[in-house]
Image 1 (cartoon, rainbow, N blue to C red):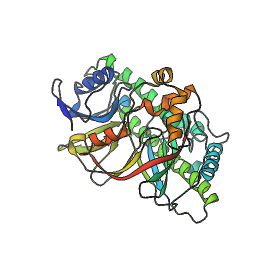
Image 2 (spheres, helix red, strand yellow):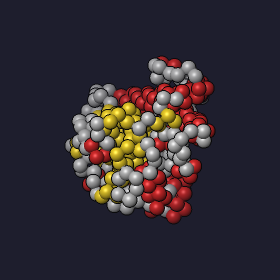
Image 3 (tube, rainbow, N blue to C red):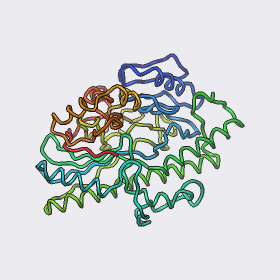
Image 4 (cartoon, rainbow, N blue to C red):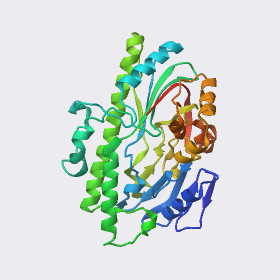
Length: 386
């Protein structure tokens, strides 16, 4: 931990030196919520979000907050280590091309419904999930846009890895938006009152609305996992077309936008991790860098001060709009090409995901040495984005 702030209702424990003013205002709002428990934990990749900053961890008593989970419910990472030691550039280009032609990217989805067996086994038969079920059947196993990616990587020890970062697509956003609006309506009738400017409307856990949100949120977490698993299966099949003897280790998966019922400091609480990863003792996790920088396979140390959490990535230094406005396509592409990376910066609109829009991942990892230990360093060979 880098510092503790004691100016608000409960302490703020930070693994970061400085945060942007808007994110700091959001952090203070969290620390003054009447149901916030013990302290607020802020990870080293923190930057502003909707209501709650990305890279924030909030433990709450008896309530759940849709905006403290976020719109991309269940967004997370998965990674597979292969037995492959080398891959030449031409073969890599062929594999990347096949991935692009097989897996829908960005706003794209499948033109036909995927088998229902690819969806989570259990689903609420009501509400948003039921309404969006048919659309979700065309989106399971698709990447999405923004900071989502597929990377082919090489570990420091020599093996090739496959990594996927994706979320719950439109169904997660629909669930998030619906229950945030529901919470706003409900909160106007009950105490404690939360200032509307906080954008942290809550649902009492024991309410029908709260229970419905939990069920639909958990469905979206499982949907995102199923979607990542499906993409990983497709990518592994593409590799098998080129390397028939290749073997794949079991998939590692970790999510970073969700809430779960846990016990901390002797009390049962709902821990909201928004852009934060579980780092309980022994938990294997994934912390990616930005496009063109290292990613890490880590083991959690179970630090109670972070509610057993760590960062979910490098974190942004500038907004998407700012990155597109100030960065240069030529300069950002040149940085990646100099490293020999097959990258995804082709035009101005791609600059929102340029390396210069993100923090230095090595500094982020240094700041959380008391939260995780690094098991494997991974360097990118090829990047596929929406």
